[in-house]
Image (cartoon, rainbow over all chains, first blue to last red; front, side, top):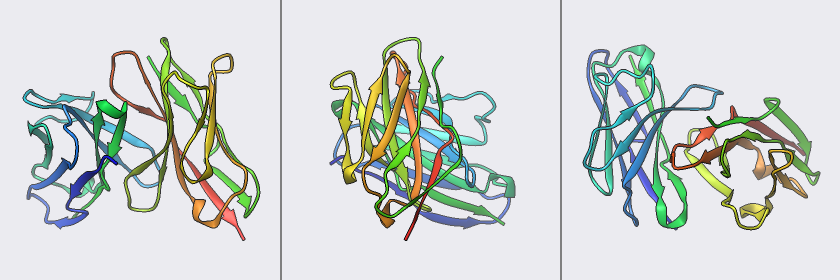
Length: 115
Length: 113
């Protein structure tokens, strides 16, 4: 079946540094990918929609300059958390739209801890 | 606009008992509906989806859900709960050309021995 690989699964970084999270569709091409943030015991909050070859569409309230999204190929989207602060600590999940299967495949998530 | 309502935050059942997790949706156009399961510190795994074919949808791990347009519902059921079913469950809707998924707030399923 369709697989989305997300790396790293866990990362701890110092306040003020940047962290890049990768999301790859392994066996299908994903024109559209999505980035979510999930707080403990809460639902997924959509941060942005990433379209291959064009600028990402950010949800209201999400800082574009802080959460940089790049979708340079049909199988790879990256989320860079710039100048991370402790309040950015969270669980970040990507998903790729699998148009052939009329569905969405999710990555395994990245636990970001900013100290 | 589309939305999903999952009432309650926690359901507890005994092993072997029926599992019923409720989901109601709001959509201005015929929706696609999804149920996902999430285990701790993991991503979401698709249980099943409704995409305007059969209204009774069978998924993995013995789960099924029935799309009821008149009730705007897509409740998830499993005849006999297993300990391994303990997890967080999310209902989601996608409607129209908008490819975004809108999630419910999720519900935690506990299974008692």
